[in-house]
Every structure is written in C-alpha cells, then in structure tokens.
Amino acid sequence: MGPKVQQKSKEQKAAAAMAGGKSKKKKWSKNKSRDKILNEVLFKEITYEKLLSEVPKMKLITTSSLVERLKINGSLARAAVRELEEKGLIRCVSRHSKQLIYTRATNTDA
Image (cartoon, rainbow, N blue to C red; front, side, top):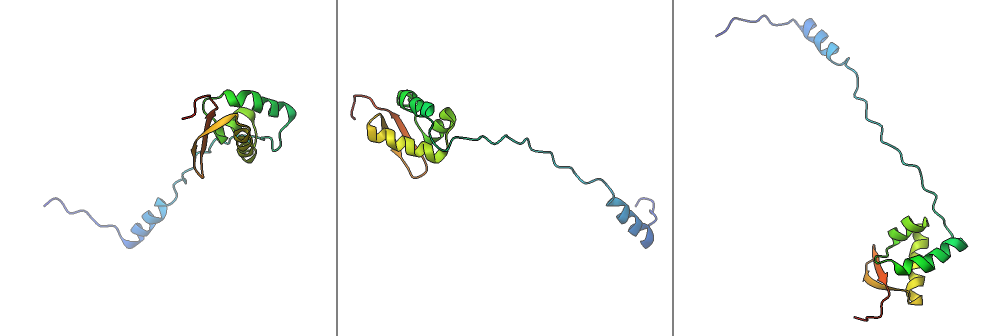
C-alpha cells in the first residue's frame, strides 16, 4: 500500500465545490440568419408570361422549382401547376399529397 494521503476537512471540501462552479458558461455559436425572401403572392404580367413560356420547356416541374425560378409563393405555384396541366402544357409524372411531379408535355402518350 502506498503512503497515506491526508483527507480534506468538510470546510475544505465545501470550498472546493463552490469554487468549481465559477467557470464561464459555454456560449452557443450564433446561427447565421438568412434574409427573408419576399415572394410574390399574385402574378404580375411579366411573371405570368414567364410561366407560360419557360415552365412548359422544363424537364422537371415541381412546386418548389417554380418558387425558386419565378420567386412566387408556394400556394401560387401549386395553382399555376394545376392551370398548366388543365391547358395541356405539362403532364403529371407522380401525384402525391406532399409532392407533385410534372414534366413537359410531349407527343408520346405512354
């Protein structure tokens, strides 16, 4: 057995416990804040023309792709997709409650 180590008194233990809590609190890193994008809620004439000319030529058409390209609201993009499908400019590939996937209308009907 090694040499005997002298134990601390109760007062010394209490002082050591109190001293341990005085370290600085961890500071959380600040998250980089993104600027809020103000997307259009209604179509402007220029945006609507862009929708009718550019979108039917896209290979993959989703609500999110229209939001990114045309800087429009999500609900407006969903309505636009519905309108384009009714006009026969685009065709549905997959319909799901959360994600609608469309493509350009081609002559081949599979």
